[in-house]
Image 1 (cartoon, rainbow, N blue to C red):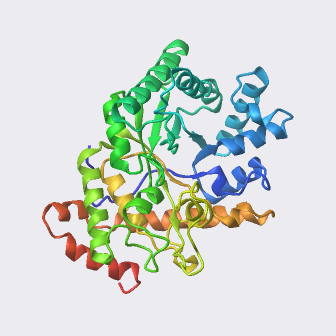
Image 2: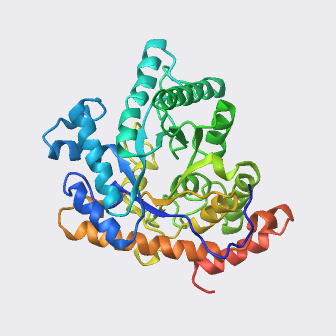
Length: 385
């Protein structure tokens, strides 16, 4: 259901991924969680690497993180209780990778069963959402065919429903996210699969970075945009047309999670595409150069507020959560979780204020006045307004 615009305030809880507070190799999970709570976060997106490291801190094998042993489930409950004691909750676990579209029946069954292994842990963590990234495999063993992917998502939804019915707990949910280097790399292509799966507990995950990386940005262009067209006006038109489609076609309650991350404007004379053809060109940028929203002093430049406004205009009421990867998170030192938690919450609060003040550009697009808005956006991002 579309929300009235502009909103008087934005009440969505603010969250962060555990990997956006420090790398699990150098930073234990509990101190990161404490810094997140101190900064003001209310939601925690638990990454697999961080959960595996937490198990190892408790003398358990991290490579068996989803084996539902009594010890593993005991530690999972301990972690869930810790997060709640800090005034937060675990909003989801992730990421599931290379799950859908597998052709071989035995391999497919094994992949879907890997998802189901998480269900007891979701109860222990007291969370209801797990989400998967769109498959990035390009070999002949997988397909991005809509019928196949939708059926896989539907079966996962049915498995989660069956588990929930059996233990009479809250309905467990499956989220599906398009990665900017995956076969299904847009919100529209992932929404198509979610819609065709036709299950109430299968929903869409939207990541502002991945939306912008496909429909706006080009890190190998000095201007930073021009993913499709070279001028700022055309780049904004393409993006706003897509986001207007999001507002018009996706009900807010079918968006299960919204992630936000900006990224650095790169110098293409020194930031070069990977020489290995197996590495997607966007991957080095994504993994080493993301930023929190509104960090222009660090090179951030992408219009995250456009994506946020469109998502909130659908009526989405869930968390606005950071997913930021950066080399600065991979260094040792107690200061890393402190500074990144503070930077993250500051960026999210700035984003919320900027989003609240956005005009309803999706309505402007329908009326054919989006070009004027493109000029307004250009001025606002350059700091002239």
